Image (cartoon, rainbow, N blue to C red):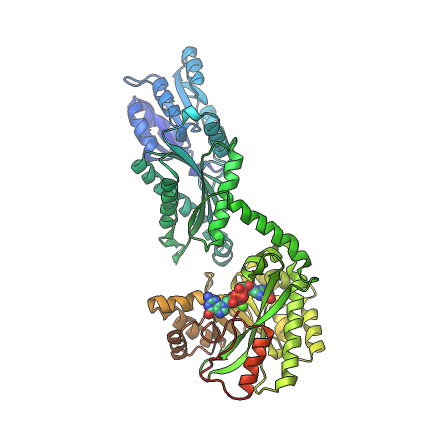
Length: 575
Ligand code: C2E
Ligand code: CA
Ligand code: CA
């Protein structure tokens, strides 16, 4: 660990001693605050986070031993390393201090090399997380287990365990770089700490915040009235992170998902509580992120559902439970049907229709996406080719097929695409593959070469969900996309707040880079009008059509071939 990040508190009534000691420590890279009395020390530890305290035993008024006892009474201070500073001769003091929970001692006159080595040992042991300076998982679990095991030590009311996870952290890391990612973690840690401090002041509660790793934080909050209060604090945490961060000269929006569980008799250990808080956090994520959810036992059913989906997905293809739906894509200035996006549907025999939003992430994790994705590609291309023969529409329709990160990383992807195109007798430019910004960023180098090979094949490339990440469009210049698909959240924002600036900027930049622009999630006539006036070329959405079954899509084509289609709206179908 780098001791430079550590803050020490020096408590001594003698100004000279304080001065000499703190100078030496500062010269060795520590940050130091000083207190001239035990009372002042107790104030300071409530206002700052220290990594260790150097506490003089002999002080007038509240002595070192009493200060030590008071510090140890407070739970958030129970793990703080306290090193006693004693006069050379008094072994009684040392024995007594260690009995009251001091971690170590040094004797006066202080032998600095030894003192520094001891301080470093304690600070390092405590702060396994050098980035934020927060306690690590082990310390947190110790605290939690102790609290569960010793009900009499608790404050009034009840306590809660929170599990906090930064939303889309990988995307932040991938688009802004790891250093910026680290800054975000540190910034989030600070805000959580501040919010918890003010919650404590208001509710009389007591908190302990830890960082078990990555983009996760755990919190123990004791002295809450009830579950409602626990949720209230959770909402405050979400709100505190909602204020934009300034990172490396940029403004970035960060959000967290929070799960919270309230103490209950059934819990016999901290691990169980943390597991349930984690589950509640996952629930918060699946409900759209940037929110807090309180654990309840019904969430166990959701975990079962996930397991069932994971298991049954393996047989879905073989059992013919999958089908491809087709959502029309419209050329916005003329209202002409330009093509379809192929979207997967799963009709589960017991669960009914399971949305790809739910099962695709699982398929991606398990690898099931690979055979399923190939099937979608083949099916969609085959269909387009069949429609060619049946309707002979001009200009030729295109088919958009989504490719996930894992699909793109298949070594034989390009040859599979080539084979499917040959088999289905489609010229390559009629296939548009959609790849999300997040997936592109996950593995830039490999993606770049795959995209170039697909492009060389003649396939069209579309960047999906653009704008969700933080990448400047100019950076994406290195990737050979033909079109950018503006994420539906921007289209929705346009409706709610009349905010067209983001889309205007994307269209302008895309124009400069000679890329086309499409928009998804068009739901109203106003949005269509705005997009048209912004010169967005293509659009899809419920305003035109939901994703359609094969039969419904045929009806649309039939109507199109009879010329009965008005302003791009096609009055059939549902999904
Ligand atoms: P996506 O690529 O962003 O697909 C667009 C999603 O927006 C679809 O959700 C579509 O039904 C929905 N949508 C269309 N119009 C509107 C609208 O006007 N308003 C709103 N609110 N939503 C609209 P869907 O079909 O549930 O698919 C979800 C995601 O699952 C897709 O997002 C895509 O990432 C993934 N997915 C679906 N099929 C496939 C596939 O065959 N392969 C791969 N790799 N991913 C797929
Ligand atoms: Ca898509
Ligand atoms: Ca999309």
